[in-house]
Every structure is written in structure tokens, then in C-alpha cells.
Amino acid sequence: MNRIVLKKVREDTLEDDASRLSDMPGSHEFWNFFAFDLNGDLGISMIFLSANMWDVNMRNAVYTWRKDQEKSPPPGSADYFLLQLNVTKGAEKIFSSVKNPPGTKVEFSPAEPRGRIGQSTFYGSMVKETKTYKVHIDAADTMNTLRLRADVEFHAASPGFAVDGAGLFGEIPGGQIHDWQWPIGYPQTSGTVLVTDRSCGTLLSESFSKGGGYVDHMWGEGLLSDVLDSWYFGRIDLGSKGALVYVWLTPKSRKGKPYGRVFRIPLGGLAASHDIISFTGAELRTGSFGLEYYSDLRFTLAGGGAVQSIFGNPAVEDWPFQVAGPAVISVDIPGDVSVTGQPGLGEYLQQEGIDSEAYQLMFSALHDMPWNP
Image (cartoon, rainbow, N blue to C red; front, side):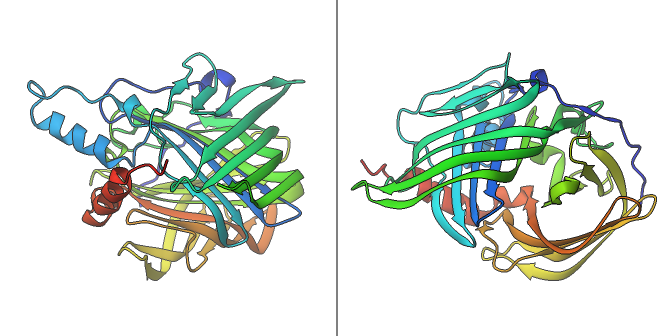
């Protein structure tokens, strides 16, 4: 395997977290906020996409424009926004939204980490010298039969981090105009979550004061699928020892070799990066829509150490381009941390699947479905 020349991990700033959306057709951006109750089984995922890389209409508009740029107007990426929401209790999904109501207004600031989609907002600032994000959600589900009202705070127990020199953590061909950053390395979370039906009946009402979570910010100029084929991603909360994130990327170009990093995030400290020098995938599975992926991942790290991630079955998210959900993760980094069989999160995402016939049909059916008034 070709070795990737590692670039320095640096602390992420509030300026880094502001909107980076480009005017280039096909550009993408999201802020992903995930929180869970450490003393229960509640989880809430809130993804603000200022330009949705998984939007079929946006991608088709880009392909049409590329075929004849003189006759086709360049599509505006900011027209394809989405607020994607999920609330889970254990393995059960209580609330889900992947559709915007008609007339939804949006705003994302290029000067500070602030965004709005409809009545839902996020804002990042320094509170008593601690980077803090406040996320407010007031939104209907996909079928407009349920409503989610939530307020969740993310406080940085470890600073956010980015890889100096940008790019997707390595020498991926064309990857320099895309980036993936963590505004908060290890968040401590608290919040309230309320799900009601149309008759104001309560399906779920919970609050938590001691929670964990995850925050990341991805953006790029043009379609990510131009440079990236797929990724494996996972995260494990290590309690008093912080957290760990792994990323294994396969470039689109045959000139690029698969590569990856493990980011070890100590509680109170900046993340350290470990080069993955070998990857072995086992237990090949097929998702509900034909997506093949390895469910048993084993990574060997430079300087010693290993990570194993075993995906749960079935996945909570199961699409033609993505499977994601609970995973069982083991970590052994000599002199740092050693845990076996701890609960975490795992994901496989393949860019080609976004253009598959199965997803095109699913997306069109959802997009064309009249909004339930």
C-alpha cells in the first residue's frame, strides 16, 4: 500500500466552522450534530445541509450543465438544502425527516457558524472560553404527521480539530478542494426532546443532562463523487479517555490508493492522528438495496495498535448508497487505550450508489409526493 504523507492536526476555530459553500455547481456542505444520553438509550441526529450532496435533482442538473455549459444555466447548489432529522430509542426509530416543507427559508452565514432551515437553527460561540453549539429544532417529519421540538447544547470537552493543509486527510487526487473538519473534538451534551402527533399527543418527551455526541462539518467545491469513491467511518466514546474516530477513504481516481486515519481524541486535549497502514475487510454483507460492504473491519496503525469495528445487523440507515448504525468497536493503542467490544457507530457510504436507479426512484417518489397539509 502507498503510504500517505500525514499533515499536522491543528485546532479548529469558529472561523473554520462558518459556511464554506462555493458557487461551483455540485458543491456540497453539511453540519452534523449527534447527541445521545449517557444514562439512557435516546439518540438524536440533526444534519443541516446547506447543499445536499445526496440530492438527485441537484446531481442531474450538474450532469446536464456539464454536457452543454453554453446552453444550460449553472445550477445553484444552495437551492438544494435539507434538514435531515432522526430520533431513536435504542434500535427503534421514533422520528425521521428527509423532506423540506414548501416555502422553507434558509440562511447560512459565511462569517460565523450560524445556520437556519425553516424554524430550526444552530449557532456556535465561545461561552466562558468553551466552544459551544446550541441547536434548536422545530420541524415536521417526512409525512407531516409528527413534530419534533428539541433544544440540544454541545460543549467542547476537547477542542475541535482539522488537518492542516485541508484536503481529505491525504494526497487524494482532487481532494484539496474538499474538507472534513470536527468543530468539537469531544462534546458533552444536554438537551430536551419532544415528539408529538398532529393531535398534540406525546410520543416521546425526554431530557438529559449528561450526554455524549459528535459534531462534524464537511464541505467541498463540485461533486464529492468526482474525487471520492467511498468511505468507511466509525466512532467510539471512551468516557474519561475521550473518543476515537476512524476514516478509511477510497479515491475515485485509479491513481489514488485507499488510505485512512484514526483520530484519537483525549478528554481535554487536541486529537492525535494515527496513519492506518493496513485494512482488512471480512463478513461481506448486502444491504436491502444491493449495496455490498464489509461488516467486520480491521485496521493496523503505524507505530503499533489496531482497531476493529463490527457493524450491527440490521443497519439503522439502509439506502442504496449508505448503511449506518450501531457497531461494536475494539481499540488497542499501546500506552494509550485498550478496550474490547464497546458500543459505537459505523458507516459505509459509496458515492456511486447515489446515482443508482434504486435511489433515483426512491428520491423521485419522495420528492414528488405532495406535502401533507
